[in-house]
Image (cartoon, rainbow, N blue to C red; front, side):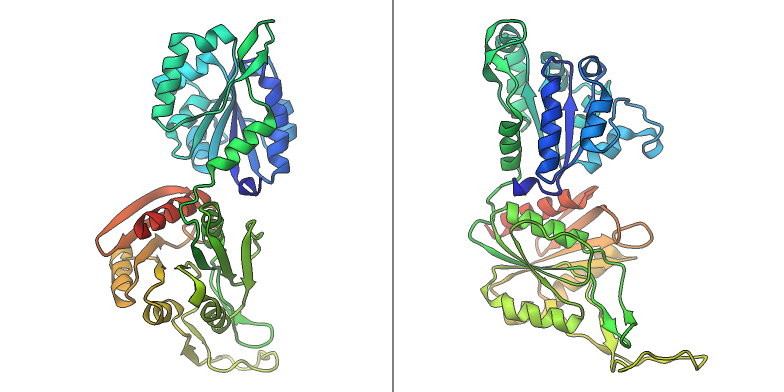
Length: 396
């Protein structure tokens, strides 16, 4: 279940006796490395207490549409932005009907309506309720909206009937949810990604750096693996776990990143330069710690190699994707960089206090020679998948 590692999964629990199975599902998701939150309908709380899911998930359980503790009371928007996927398990006949109608009169239905991440439902109900034409029509509607239907299974039901309507077991749901993230859109391709900042030494204890956390680059690497690509990640100093099945190479300086890229680029099909590489470095690094003596200290800087431009120039068969982090004139600078470095694609994002760097969310503007696409604010993991899907579409 490596594709679930570090994923943000929202489990929706609705009013069904099968609600007790959701407890095991939350436990198994945690074991698979996912970060889990739980949203419960009012009727679900009659079957299992929120405290049970809080203990299992390690997070507060969400039950109220208007939550004063969430961003200005808009808890459904906060959850919709946070999650990488929603799994409603169990999904009652009533909730399936309300989801098909596009209702938003409780927290869980509102989150589903506001979310652009994948949604799946695991039905759980009496066999006659499941086979009813109204339920079947609602299921067809959900499928037409790309909402996955997991199950139901056949077997003995709580009411004593035997037939189709049982919620799938936790292990089956994990396998299906894991497959949801595996697109194979880049199967057979090799992707080289740079991420994080670089540190340019002033002396043995000081350096010039920037505020890049590397989260966007790591999210892209995870998405590339899910798309079936062999993925190499060259990263500056960050405090992030390596995504499963990613070959990670750690560097510090821009020169080291340059050398690592040039060592691996020849075997790659796609190069995504998301690292915030320092443009300049001190001309010389002092061999010993510089003492605080003079009132003014001058440091002569020289340019670092332009990794992205050189890859684009020397390896024209590699699909090159650059990043432009800007504080002003985002589109102008991005378009200029796209043309000046002869890139296939440029990804632009605004940075500054509380934006872009050191956050779990972002918004991206992507430009290429014949068009552009906007990715509204959402989690960086979701943006990583959206970007990889766009790249796969472009090279297809």
